[in-house]
Amino acid sequence: MGRKVLYAVLTIVFGAFAGAFCWAFFFLMNLGIDLLWNALPAQLAAAGLPAVLYPVAFCAIGGVCIGLFAKRFGAYPESMNEVMAKVKETSRYEYDHLGSSFFGALLPLLFGGSIGPEAGLTGVIAGLCTWVGDRLRFVGAEMRELAESGTAAVISAIFATPLFGMVVPVLGEADESEGLRSVSEVRLGVPKALKAAVYVLAVAGALGMMALLGSLFGGEGGLPHFSEVSVGVPEFVWLVPLVLVGAFAGWTYFPFGALARRISAVMGERPVAKAVLAGCLLGLAGVALPFAMFAGESQTEELSLAWTELPVIALMATCFVKVLVTQLCLNLGWHGGHFFPIIFAGIALGYGMAAIAGIDPVFSLCAVTAALMGAVMRQPLMAAALLLLVFPLASAPIMFVSAAVGSLFPVPKSWLGK
Image 1 (cartoon, rainbow, N blue to C red):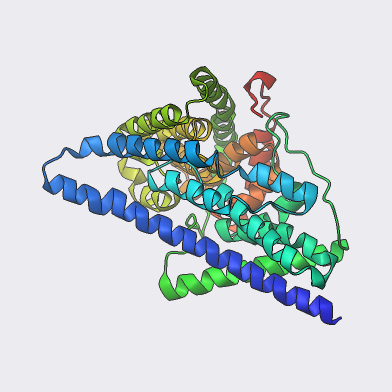
Image 2 (cartoon, rainbow, N blue to C red):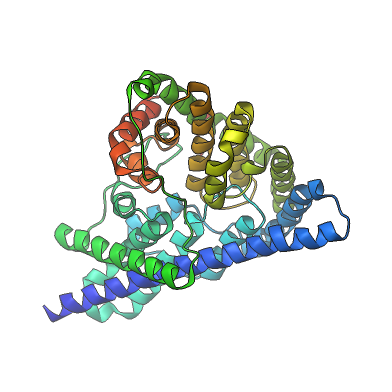
C-alpha cells in the first residue's frame, strides 16, 4: 500500500514537472518570437529597411541555423509518432539527446516555422521520465510505465485537453506508411486499472501546474478556446458542403507531403541547403499571406478579430498554403509537429466558408476543421478529442461526424510517407 501511495505521489510530481516544462518552453518560445519578430523589426524599420524583406530574410537565416544544427547534432527532435512508438515498444525513451531535442524543437518555432511544439516536448519529457524511472527502480515495476504517463501528461499540457492526452498513448498515432491510424497494443507492465489511474494523476498534475504558472506569470501557450456555438437550420443546410471542403483540404496534406519528400530526395543529404530552401519558401508565403507562418497559436486569436476584414480568397488560400508550407518545413529539416498549424489551416478555411455562407462562424470552424483533421489523422475519435482544445463540448457530435467523413477520403499509397 505504501509503495502505491509513493508511486501515486511521484506520478503527480512528474506530471506537474511535465506541465512546468511545457510552460517554460512556451514562455521561452514566445519571448524569442517577440524579440525576433517585433523588437528587432522595429529597430530595422527605424533604420529604414523595408519591412517586406523581413519574413524572407529571417526565415532564410533560420534555415541556416537549423541546417547547421542538424548537421552538427542530427535530425532532432524526433516526431511524436516516433517517440510514442518507442515508448510503447519498450516502455522507455532513451535520454542521451535531450538537449538536442529541446533546442531542435525551439529553433524552427523561433524563426516562424509552420510547425507545432509537440514533437520536441514529447521526446524530452519521455526521456526525462525514463531517466527518473531508471533511478527509482526500487519503487517496482510500475516505474516502467512512467515514460508513458509522462507522454500523456505532456500531450495534455501542450494541448490543454485531458481527453486527448489520455487517448493518444492508448490508441497511438498514425503510421503514415499505411495511411491509417491503427490501434496499437500497449505493453502493460502493470494492471490496466492502475495504468488508467497513472494517466489521470499525471495529466492532473500537468494541467494543474500549467494553470498555476499561467495564473502567476501568464503565457500558458496553446490555442484559444471558442466557448459558444450556434446551431440552426442554415448551419445544417451548409453542413455537407462544409465537411466536403474541409475534407478536401485535409486530403491535400498527402500530395503536398509527397511533393515535399520528392524535393528532399532530389536534394539529397544537404541539411543546410534544404533548411534554407524551406525557410525561403516559408518567408515568401509569409509575405503574400502573413498567417501562413508560425504554429498558429496567437495567430488564431488575431484571425478571429480580423477575418471579417479579409477577402474570402485570402482566408481560403491561407489554409492551402499553410498545409503546403507545413509539409515543406517537416520534410526539409524544420522538425516539429503538424497538429497546431493544420488546426489553424482548418480555422482559416472555416472563416472563409462562414463568410460565403453567412452562418455562425464557430459552427463553420467546427465542421471544416474536424473534417480536415479527420482526413489528416484518419481516426475520428482522436481528431474530435483533440479539437475539444479549441471548440465547445456541445459541438462534439458535429466534429465527430465531420471527422468520420473526412477520414473516409481515400489516399493513394504513393502519397503516403514513412
